Length: 68
Image (tube, rainbow, N blue to C red; front, side, top):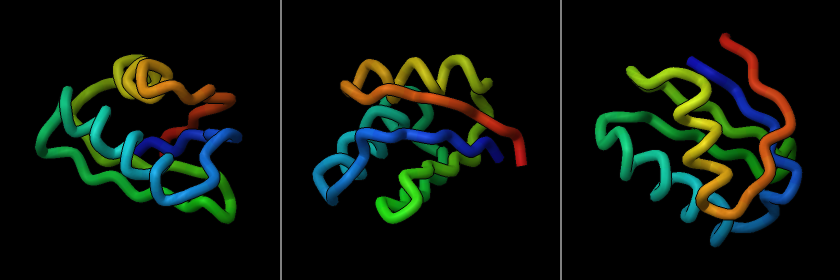
């Protein structure tokens, strides 16, 4: 699982856009978004770079990532 800091994520629309972007490149991914902490956790077969690019392509900045 990989955790990303997404400082611009603040609402349900944001979480839906991020989840849609990740699921577009990995339909089997599990995505958990927390607007309170502004963190996104992803369980995916894809690497950190591919996932962070998907979040960026959805229009959100990614500040950090950590494998957990």
